Length: 271
Length: 272
Image (cartoon, rainbow over all chains, first blue to last red; front, side, top):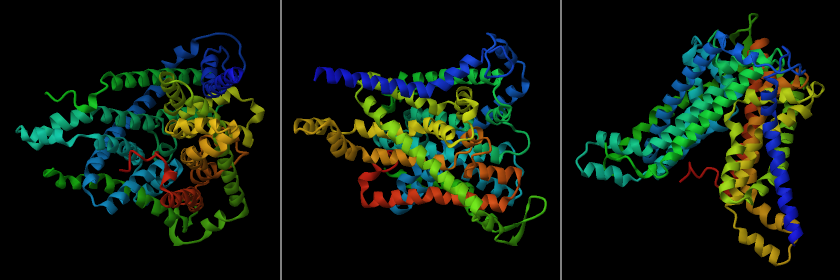
């Protein structure tokens, strides 16, 4: 029995190590080859950090980064607002219509991006809408509203309505009680919803590909057009930087949301 | 709550938004698939079945069947790879299991292009253009979608059931087949749906690892839409893709209406 459980433990470690290896091996390769001196990828010729230095001189990448950030910030802010409205409003709908509306909000989560992209491109064309920043933001909001709704409806369900009623009893106007009670109580979930949609929007390729006009290249679009030239250490360096930024961003986000463990119980009611 | 009855209007703006920018555009795809293509890559407002005639010719059907095969292979390999991994994870003690879960889901927040580029660095050039390369990269990409629902249903399972089965003399295989697997089937079905659906419409992985020799619906639609500008054909192919996604989804919904346990806890947050 003892040797069997030792064997099981060993097997478990093997499985997990294999899984982690398969998941992170590509990322490790990116880091290794980003230090390759050769201009072409695939052949190691020596150590060099010149590709990182070069990244800072490529203005088109910085411009694409700005476009991506702008689009993601707008899309996630608007989606969070709409998703929160939906989470609040749907509670008071009749059961049948509410279920229908919930179905509507969950479809964009399961429909492939390809369909959202093609249908919006044809839609914009049929209405003769010039494609630009606004059309990309609207396209990202299609999935953004759905994600925000899922996060916010869970938060609204946990919301203690007596807090709001107590604020009213204490003489607050409905607006004041929302401003000082409901919104602070929901703040952590609002943050999670915003970050989630921001990340999805920032990383989106396919929907942007279909809904963007000429110009307005986001970072994924720019990188995609570079990837057609095959393996380049310069692209590896870019990805290495993006990966590190993602790690830092996720760590900061996690730290912010775990800092106040009981914050959904309303730790900050006093103004 | 007295004033809360009045907040029902708040749900209207998002509902209208999704109807205008999601439901109506999907309908527009249907109408574009029966329009006539003009010489300059635009469409003329004439009824024509040319798009559909192309969409049911043997070439498109072979692309369709390749997409289905690929999606089924990816789903199956995710299930086969993901299940042992979820079993191993479920046995890890609690603080460590949290860290593992973060490590597993972390790839989901990194860029898909980044993961693809990493695999381009890793896989030998000769492998490109085969179903093996495309399937391998897609399986690893979608593995977290399978792993997380499986882990959730394994965590929710009553461990005493397994102990009882072992005490009654079941071998480990019998315990798995008669106890663990039936109890975690909802998680497995949710995971399969979460992997199958996006893998039918994947474009980036087949594009970069297929090198034009491995055409699936995703690459076909982009090619016809962007390069050939044959919009009726692209629209009709998109409807194939939509059908491919809807059929398993409707089956799943129908099954879950008959057996509510099938959907498991995946939509707990949405349903009351």
